[in-house]
Length: 116
Length: 113
Image (cartoon, rainbow over all chains, first blue to last red; front, top):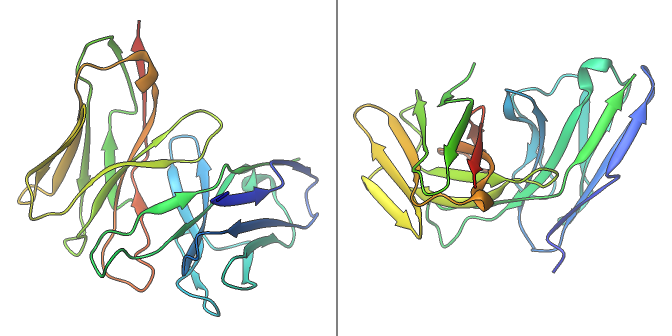
């Protein structure tokens, strides 16, 4: 199992350009998430998808859109990139374990995005 | 709005020392408190987690202490090693269809040889 994979690993954009970050998981998880990580800010949730066909806003959704393409894939799109979107983006997936509170999130390796 | 406050921001200890990282939360609906470990260039990975009905949990050299009344929890690393040098995030989650996590701001731990 590859777990959670993300592409690309690194990207440089100019202000105003658009791009899509791809994420796929092979663990048959229902829930998927997109986070951004900035120094001193921890990980902040951008969007999440509780199950195939549903998406919801997280803490910092402005400037982003998402698509839950199928159970495996969850993409993040920047329509018009801004320097404030320079960050490291992580995708994660999870599944509730046996009806308990335990729901481990498994993270991908991240995409480093620089917007000039 | 930061619902999980983490301190310190950075921590340097000697090998064998016991670093302690503290977190405090506000939302009493949180019912699961995991800690994640992140090495440079990698995604975070679950280290250890605790439920609020337990005051302490140990897994190997890692211990979580939980104080429900104070709404605080902490991570202790016994006999710390240079390989433990990483960024540590506390987190909390509550009810909700996806049980999304709220993360603390992270602690960069350096264990000197």
